[in-house]
Image (cartoon, rainbow, N blue to C red):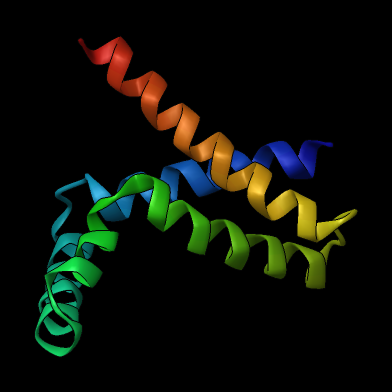
Length: 99
């Protein structure tokens, strides 16, 4: 259970790091990747890097896969969407608390 909670929090934090934080170490490469995607596939596809819900789907899957292969996660096909949804809900909660 603790593993799943940690996966959810890690998914949220990494999603926020990619989509909202302005830390130069992350913001620079993300901006370059977004530009490359926009040039290759168009603006609609690059929007996915600025959407916390979208990024949390990819990160939730990646983190769940890594955890399943290393420490073991029960029913990883169910943990993945839970991590993504929890990250999105935490992002909404953060927005509400900031207002």
